[in-house]
Each structure stands twice: as structure tokens, then as C-alpha cells.
Amino acid sequence: MKLRFIPALALPLLLALASTGAGAACVPVVGAVKLLPDTACTIRTVAQPGTPATLFPGDCFSVQLNLAGFPTATGYAGSTVEPLVSMVPGAPATMAPVAVPAAGAALPRQIVQTARTTMYIGQGARRTTLYTTDVVVIQPQLSATGQLAPKLTTEQILISGTDGKGAYANVSGHLTVMGSTIGKPAPVAGQLCLP
Image (cartoon, rainbow, N blue to C red; front, side, top):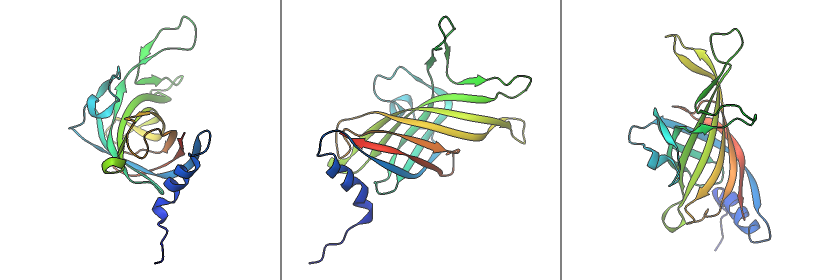
């Protein structure tokens, strides 16, 4: 009997084998992520239990994350209203989302949003729930209707925890999304690690 090597298993297999030694084994990952507006999504479907955040009204999405060599992850994401504390002593605190003003310009230089995501990767006993904390930076422009719209978007995603079950129970890592993901796939790159 001839064994066939399935390319989709290559990265998870290497990650699992490397994690049997001391320390964390990390592999670079690339792929695409897509968000679609989803009215069924709530803070309970988006954030890790106990998260002190609330959802920004009307900003909830279903997520599909495809990373080369890994099973497709699906779930929910949403922009959140969370406290922001300045690193400057004595400066006032505020809440996200925030706008960074541009001197002498009608439009802000950047809009900064916080977000949370819950994704499910794998099936059955191998299924893991991943929780992330995200920061989105948007360079805005005016749309044809005069509304603020993203011109350029970048998102930093940190895996903040898991449900402790399945094939990726102790995974950590980060992803960077390059572009707007709403309604169309955007490229994503980063690193996943298993202890």
C-alpha cells in the first residue's frame, strides 16, 4: 500500500511534531480572511466569556479564515467599545473607536478601532475555539455619498486564548490583515505557535 502525503496536513503536522520538543514551535502562516455582515452576531458570539467589552452598534460579522495548510476557521467578529488609556502620565482616558485628527484637514488622519473575534477550527473532538483581541487602523476617505469610508485598512490580531480543547488547544500567535475584509477576501500573514 502506497501512502499519499496530503499537502493540507503539512503545516499542522510539522507544528505538532515540533511542539513535542522543549519550548514553543512557531510556523509562519499566510492566507485570506473575509467578513460578511451578520445580524445574528452578539457580544457572546464574538468575545471570550468574561470580556468587559460591548459591541459597536451595527458592526458584527461572520468570519471565514483560510490559512494555507490549516482547516478553514469560521466564527464571528465585531468592533468593540473598550477603554483606551494614554501612556502619557495624567492624560485623559477615552473609549474606542477613536479618530486621530489631521491638522487643518476635515477628515481624521486615522480611525482606530478595537475588535474581538471567536473562531472555530477543526471538527468533532479536534475542534478548538480561538479567541482574539484585534486593533484595526483605517485611513478614511469620503465616499461618493459623502460618508466616511476606508481608503486603507490594516488589522493586528492576537490570539488571546482558546477553550483548551481540540487539536489547537494551546495555540498562540498573531496575524496581520492587509486590507478591508468586509465582503471580499483580504490577505493575511502571521505566525502560529504551539508549546
